[in-house]
Length: 365
Ligand SMILES: Cc1ncc(COP(=O)(O)O)c(C=O)c1O
Image (cartoon, rainbow, N blue to C red; front, top):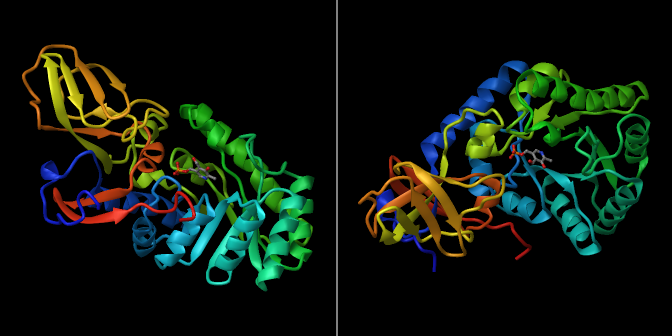
């Protein structure tokens, strides 16, 4: 039984805790800012859902003006297609016979495009597509310097694009790159690294076109890079920035000044001393990946330690408040690693619960 689903209209401070809370109005303001940056340049928005998860958010983005969404797994992609968003870029490599068959079935009922970065994987996609009697549009992932997935730019990528153009079962839709390795750089150095990274993608696109290969989609950039990317990388057709709809302490550190639309609400379970506050959310609720969350509206905090079901806050100075039963709200250190800890998201408007969204897509269930 969901903790808060029967409680619409409830004030935020009365929710069962711990609760993942979305401020819908802040979400809309953040989404509008992304679109306002992209639209004048004719660049489309295809937000990454890996950190947002809830398919209703994919629908909201499309209603706001996104052309579709980006997903990391075939399960996420299925969830957003089920919710009515047919245009999906599956930006990670889908592998294994069962998952490839799943991708092919999904391609039969949506416009899902699949990332690939090697001839062997491309052949596997093509074979799954042929078994299902469909054609799967593919996006060639190019390594722009992150050294994670991605075929090397230049001739290796051009050869793979040529292969995709001629192989039965697939159709070349475009190329993508993700410059995530520059996130922590600052100022002019960051801009220069983004330009240099995305030049690898754009030069490869130009080489493909010179070789007579049609490239429609050129996809890149995330929430911590897109504002620079769109000014220095002419030729990108769409950006994948997703987490910018929430923002968090990591995105703030990476240069984004969006509102914090997603928080985790906890409640004080114990006050063992005037400086110690124990809340009912630990590492199963809050994540410390890319940095600890920050408690809002508390006197100066000396430390925060997360155990499984307890958050242990030590204040700099003694304080009588908050008292047992009071709420303590946290800004996530990183929303991507926080949302996936929760089964549901409490959606609030003007401080009242409007809806509770299930968070599916972690597995194929
Ligand atoms: C392929 C890809 N694109 C874009 C992003 C950026 O996503 P976000 O905008 O949600 O930070 C990531 C991950 O960080 C990614 O793996």
